[in-house]
Amino acid sequence: MKIVKIGGSLITDKAEYKKFNRILAEKILSEISGEKLILVHGGGSFGHIASKKYGLPGKINETTIRGCSIVKNDMALLNNHIISIMVENGMNGIGFSPYHLWNGSEFDYKPVVKSFELGQIPVIYGDAYIDRDEIKIRSGDDIMVDLARIFKPESAIFFSDVDGVFDKDPKKYKDAKLIRRFKNESISFAGIENDVTGGMMKKFHSMIECREMGVKTYLINGQYPERIGDLEGEKFVGTEFV
Image 1: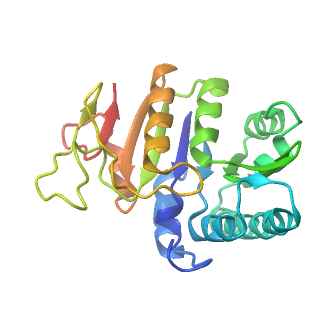
Image 2: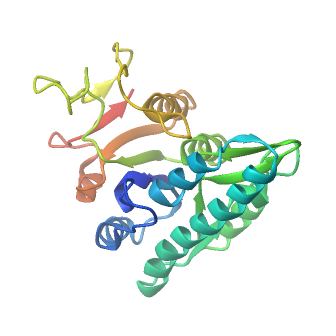
Image 3: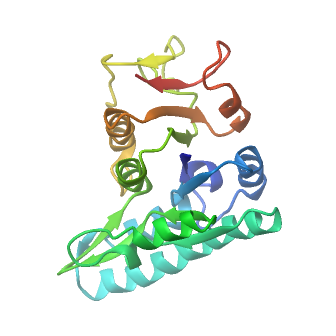
C-alpha cells in the first residue's frame, strides 16, 4: 500500500481564500485511482489564511476559539470537495480530521486503521485541534510521518508544486539543479517564507523521517501526477529519498 500527500498549494490558490483547483485535484485523483492507499491533503488557502488571521496555533482565547471554528469548517469543506470527486469516480473515500483523533495525549489512528481494513480510502487532512490550554495545528506532513510509522507502507509520495529537491531555490536561481536521489546533500531554505505549519523545511524533514523508517519516499510535482507511474524508471522526474 501507499500513503500519498497532496499539498495544499496544488489544490488551492494559496493567495485567494477558499479557492479550490478542482481540475488539478481530479487529475491527481485519477492517477492514483485503483491504488491501495491512504490519502492526506494540506490546507492551502482553506487553512492557512484564516489560521494566520486568528493567531493559530496559539493559546486559547476568544480570538483563537473563533479561528478554530472557522478553520475547521473551511478544512472540512476542502475535504468534502476532494471526497466528492472520489465518490463520483468510484473511490470510497472517507474523511478524518486530527481534531477527532486526538485523545488528550496522542493521536489515535484506530478509526483510520479500521476504515482502511474495510477497503475504504481514508482521507486525512491537516487541521486545528485542542490540546489543554492551546489550539494547535497538526499538519499533513506530520500525519504522513504518523502513517509511515503505523502502516509501514511500500512508499510515501508527496505531491507538491515543485519538481523535487534542488540544491538551491529554483524559483530564484536558474542554475538550480534537481537532486534525483537525495541522501545527505546540503540544502538551503534561506529566504523561503514559512507558513503556519512550518514551511518547506518542515516538509523536507517529514520526508526524511518517512525514509528513516524504511519507507521509500518520493517528492513529485503534482502538476504532473502521471510521474507517479515511473518512480523506479530512468525517466522519473522528482526526488527519491535514499
